[in-house]
Length: 301
Image 1 (spheres, rainbow, N blue to C red):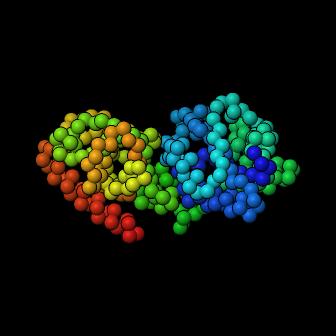
Image 2: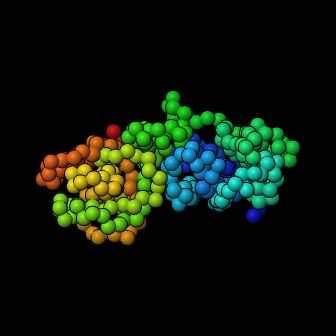
Image 3: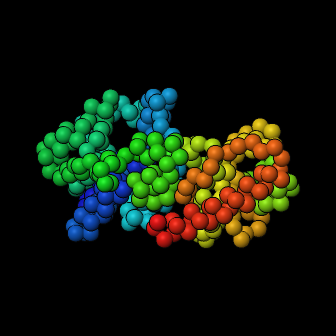
C-alpha cells in the first residue's frame, strides 16, 4: 500500500449525511495530494462483541456499506474483524500497528466523537497529539447538522422505529433500504388474494415497525414502484412476521432473486380484516395511496 493514504475510520452505519461529508473531505484531500482515499471499518459492530445487549440494530448490511462507499469514490476499504483480542489493543499500539504500519496513513480524518483502543481510551484529542508527534496530520470533523438536527445513526434509528421514514431519509441523504432474497411465503397473495407479492427474507436487522409502506423495489438494477407490508398477516391467523412487497405492473416469478426495497412513507398500520374480500378492497386503496405518495416523492413534494 503506498505511503500517501488519506484514512478515515469508523463503523459508518447508514452512511448518513454526516458520514458523507466526512468521506467527501477524505476524497477531496486525496485528489489534491495524489493520494488514495481509504476507509477502515469494523465488522461486526464493536458493541456486538463487547456489550451485545446494548448493540444497536444496524441500518445497513456490510454489503450495502461497501457498495455505497464504492459509489461515493472511496478507492480502498479495509474491514477489520472486531474481536475481544483486537479490542485489547492500547491506543498507542492501535496507532502504531494499524494506522502507521498497516494503513500507512499520511493523513487521518475522523468524526468528533471517534474513540479507539482499549476501553475506548483513545480520543480525538489523543489522536491529534499522537499524529503531531509522528508527523501524521489529523483532522477532526465537527458535528454535522441538517437544519437544526444533529445527524447521527442513533437519531436515524429513532426515526425509523417511530415510522418517520421521511425524517430518517432526510438525515441519511438517501432512502432507507432493506436487501435480501425472495423466498416462498404462505401463498396468501397469489392463491387467496390473486395478487403477486415478493416475500423478502431481509439481510438487515429489524428496525421498522409493523405496517404498510409505500416503497420502491430494485431488481437487477431496475426500479419498480411498490407497496410493502411488514407483519404477521393477522386476517389469515397469526403467523410469523413477514415482509411482502407487491410490485406495480410486474408479475414475474422472482423467488431466489436478490432485491432491494426502499421505504418512502408509512401508509397505515396492519390490522385484522373480517374476511379476505375486505382485505383485498383495502389493498387496492393502499396501492392507490402508495402511487400518490411515490408520485409526490418523485417530484420532491
